[in-house]
Image 1 (cartoon, rainbow, N blue to C red):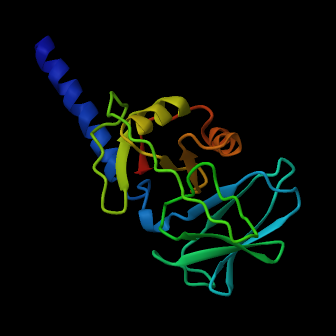
Image 2: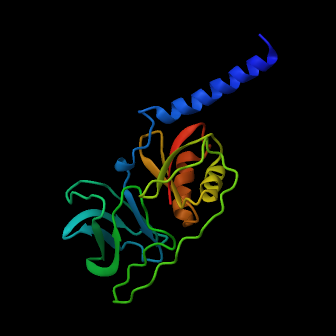
Image 3: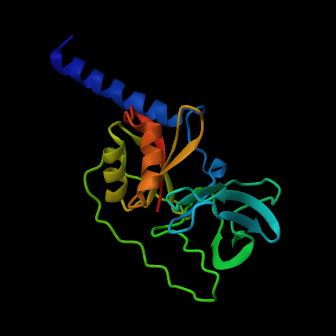
Length: 214
């Protein structure tokens, strides 16, 4: 067997391994399984934030000692939450102005939800546009109409995953941890969310499927 033939065979084997990982049902990330992540900061420790669909509570969280909070709002449940539902919030039992539209796998962009009790409204900033660059994905991501793309990350650190995601214009990455829980890497998000992601994947990644979100 010639050296060139062995090299071609090794390359084909590696490519097949990448494709096989992407197609494994047990490890694939299903968009319909993902929650919507709401988060914010600048609150008072101990305040209680409740998410509601109509009058039905669909999630609750207590603000931590640093004044930050985050809440994964799951599909289904008591409120039969599904794509397109309007989710409102209360702060210590009082209604706030802010609301979100629930879409599986989406999340609140920086700087997070302010949760104001007045009638003041703000216009959210448009997300930045990034120019595609070299990435560590097995193939160029193709985003669907909801802004999601399932791709194979060829391995590397959390920072390398963030850089690759940012290079293709993604604002977040969902990855399933060893316990089967989906963790969100919010590009440019607050430190407390970044710390949660690093705690789950601090040693980095081998070849794995990830879900990019614009």
